[in-house]
Image (cartoon, rainbow, N blue to C red; front, side, top):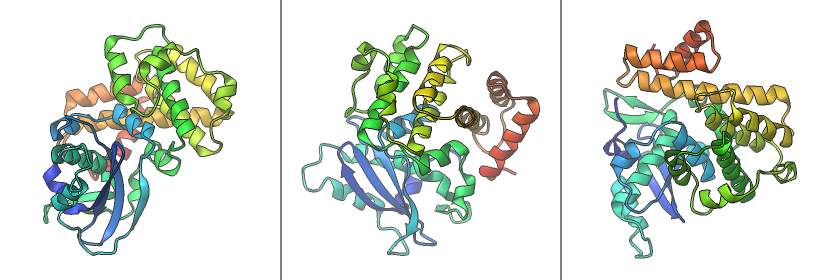
Length: 316
């Protein structure tokens, strides 16, 4: 199908609960009963149209900072079919305690499904979403890292917010647009952009306080992703991320791999824009290839990346 529409996911909504400014939604496959949980952001005044326009890297970073990227993977649901989705969402606000409207919950539910859409396939004949077999194989390396090792600890999320702020300001200039993007990126329970901008650079000691294990890799990968969006991929932003890698005690080989994973996701998003209706738009496709070249990929590597993209998206 083309653009992801809220109406198409309503039959999948089996459960929903508010958790502060997040909406946790369970999506149930009508054919298999498999349940997958996703998380969307609740925000006053946010509409379905707003969510439809929010795509790509910044939304992935935002979901990561909210501490929940993929919740619990997939599991068998107790019922073979989803309940009426609209009724489930409405129940969230029935106690009168929720400050959010039905439309704001719909927007959060659509964002929640965007986070787990790779685990579903569109059934053209039945005009419905069904669970996709072998969903793990359809994830990019970037997405798999986010799923395996999300950044969930409050201390780590705070460090990540500061890391991203430092990447954005590393070249000594932060445009009003960049400031606005950071403001939207960092959730309200973390230090604001204004506060982080006034702080001195993170010290090695502060970074060493991050939780051990794979979540450090995720933090560095996300910093790489933001740094590589800059036109100068070898500039101050990347130099700062390399300093993060040393402070987080991530070996140089692994740091390079995380950089590759971040670059691969940027390219994945570019190819997604180049195939808006499952057919390539030549002009936009060339933009994707230009991005890959800027990221240091050869023509052969770009062609291989495009083949992988088409395989994951079922475009072969």
